Picture 1: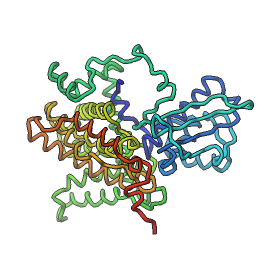
Picture 2: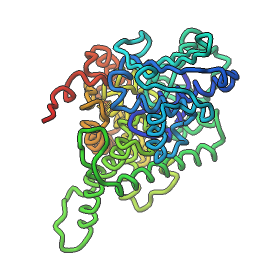
Picture 3: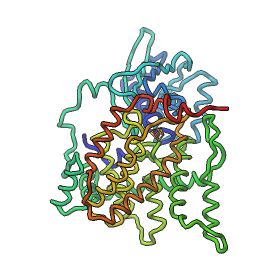
Picture 4: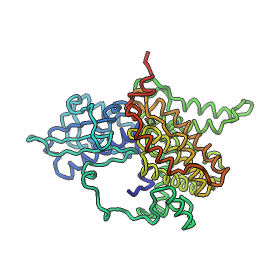
Length: 458
Ligand code: SF4
């Protein structure tokens, strides 16, 4: 499996990478396939079947709406979030789905959107789309949303692509040990090695511009989060906090106001809250590496850029590349999906990635970087996924702020050492995988355990 930095950082919409972005991409791919096969004009009905976790928390995560938008030919990186409500409202009112944006089709939500109490064996996030004509089934496809917006078709599982289709990387690595050995053997930092690998897909200038585009989207998301106020959608009546906190932190900068000695940490909290509130509201954001955990990396990068007067675009590129190296290790050797391994796979992986990115730009050796990533992940082990009401709000929003601060602390600890430490990052990632395998299904994005059932609405 070859994974690019642009697989881990994708511009999308909230609130969930596995439950919103992935299903929307799957449905848009389905609509595209119908167009390419010349079937659009023959279709009389489309049915969506959601299984497992997609069904259990699908409405809270807007999976159903994401599928409808995808069937309309909309993609998560291109859709204007402001058009989502009107599009869905019109569909529900007129009971008409504009398939691929061009073919009107009668759509009865209760009949055609099925949230099933069943699971498919390959992955908990499964969905099947069916297109029927006058004479019966015309085309069907099953998709798995495997975390971080990645989707896999059933056909790819039944008949994996052969090695001829694989991109060959100059510095292929599947473990942190291999990564460190390659850095040492070739005299490269982690970000330099990652840049060399990225050049297998695109030239260096394109990688650089692409990553600066990701950073720009992260900044825009924070700016929106600092501006927008009110209550988050979904019925829990969770109030947005970022705008108010921002005003209060700006006050701290004025003379004669007694400020917190921990104001840098409060700014980190602020950046994370801003991103995750935007995500919860279905806004434009960057999957990093998932939506639920999307606030951690931007918060730590904003912290570095705000408090380091010498910070520049080169640092942004190096930060994101080094963070992606650790994301690749987590994805290859465990999972970044809450439905597979619980929140340790989402917030834990993002925390570890953020620590790697910050360590890189603060001048850590590859060994110190690995140590920082290890500390950050180790102290997220066992973290369950139990979002109240199936919404990516409680505990997700605050959890990102806590993890962002944790990532910074992990870097501080690692930079005080020489990179030598007791448990390797590889072992911690394996432990995350094994802990996830042992974790009861109630704690894997089903909202059937933990805080999700402790909350009683009154
Ligand atoms: S609890 Fe963690 S894994 Fe679950 S939805 Fe929230 S952020 Fe994602």
